[in-house]
Length: 542
Image 1 (tube, rainbow, N blue to C red):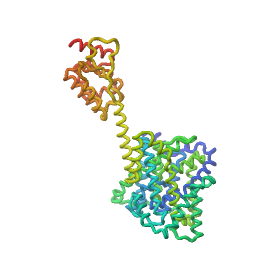
Image 2: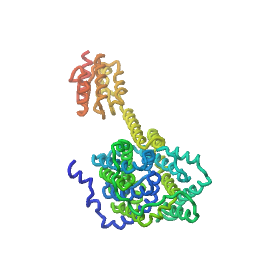
Image 3: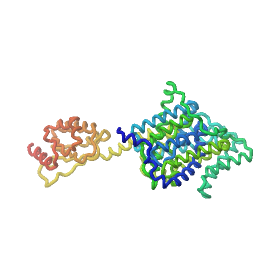
Image 4: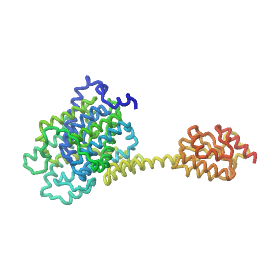
């Protein structure tokens, strides 16, 4: 990499061009996002098992670091629902002491991916896989909140949120569960109805304030967040041992993969809004990697770009990174001056917030568009969603991309074909013993046998002209099978002429022996008329 390419990954004055004109609207946008982010940071921290404090630390520390170092001018980072889904089973299995190390390890991996210029790889993930992944995450987030909404502890089933939800419902005692259930339902109702009243204040904040006030007024005994420190904890290095690193290597890779995918998807979505500049995918990975490392040092969770908060930021008019920085500072102020009040928020209220968040993640219009596009896209969408819920998020992405690749290869293979054409010009006696075959599409491992089998079945001819100028793709398998077919036809006494080989395909044909299989090297011909003339000479000479 050149010095210039390295500099492109670093912050600079270019990041704040136009700030003199936009600082007021950036500050107001940051305030709006900070208010929206508060209940989500608390809820995601609690839901992951790391605690409300970890969610706030992540939103504050990672929010600032990612804003300064990231590749998007409007991206807002912090804890997200998708990360909760991955992190919760890791903490359930490894314990809270694994949080700092897995967060820092994942951050280093994401940082390395950005430095290695791997940012654009997210573009290889098909749209149906992304939407299926999103729906699966939404279902898991909703199911994860069922125990809290019923006021019971979730059973430890790792990633199997549906099992924990079923256990909570089956074992619930409604004599005590009705209070948290009422709280969760009330919060959800307020969040749905409030936007019809005004959008000046987020419905989640209003709902949580009302729920917390109601619990205090009615003296209900329901689980709450509990005591929070009135400030950020001191940074400290995680305890690193060889055994711990080996044990957490797999989880760290899963967390890093999700952080990279979600952050880049969020940045890509944000870049489509009017007035928003593009983004640097590699720098975004560097920024998110550093954000997770910093978050881990302060006791936070892995960070990612947050699509919903980023959308709020853009719609509020944000134009520079100052908005995301202000959002983090607003959360810091809340922690410093209102930690005791925030600690009284009922867990059931946070469950209601996340249930509504999960439902809004599923966009019916998008789902309909995906399933109606094609049968293959519908299969990809459903498969990814099912694997996400029942198995694992990373497996869902891997399986989705693999199936998409198979379907794409099948489509390319089906487009390949062999077409017999009439010889150009006026007919000459003996032309019926010449077969002019045009190879179309792709002659590769997925289609070579099927396509060239048709060539090998040509009968009652003395000359076969293979017209290859229209061939888009040729791989080693296709070249090797073509050589076998040419040799087979020549052994049967059929003269093969190869016409119009593209220069990029010629080395493959030579190495695979297709050219050597011709009885005469002059039978490799560039012009169609010359090939037909040579074919007629062969027929006339027999």
